[in-house]
Amino acid sequence: MTLRRVRIATGPLVASLSIGGCARVGAPSFELFGAYFPGWMFCGLVGIVGAVIARAVLVRAGLSDVLPYQLFVCVAIGLLAAVLAWPLSFGW
Image 1 (cartoon, helix red, strand yellow):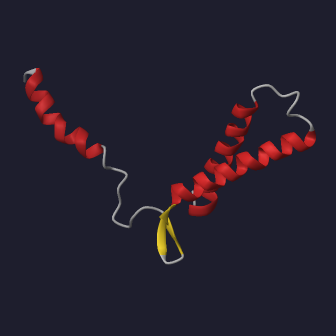
Image 2: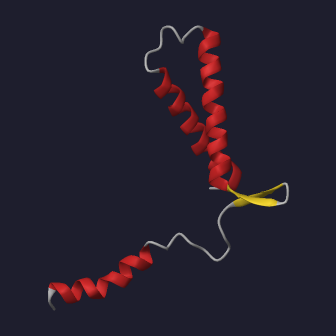
Image 3: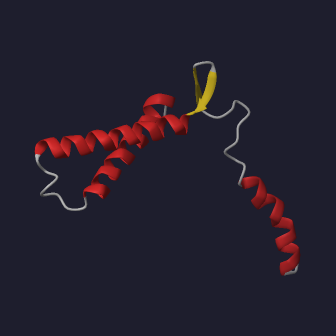
């Protein structure tokens, strides 16, 4: 087999692997005020709230003057909150 034939034969296989995450049951979502919202949007909101709370705690504790790279620390805490919200809300 030539390299061209191998590429033609494996093209549909590679394309089908890209949609492997799609399922017949639908994406994780929840109903809010009669509309369905995706789960990632909920987890993103939890992450933003987590970062804001982390910033408030750092300021209140007096660590905002001492701690370097506060933005990265708050973003990391918010990301951790968002990642932990996913399995707690939608299961492992």
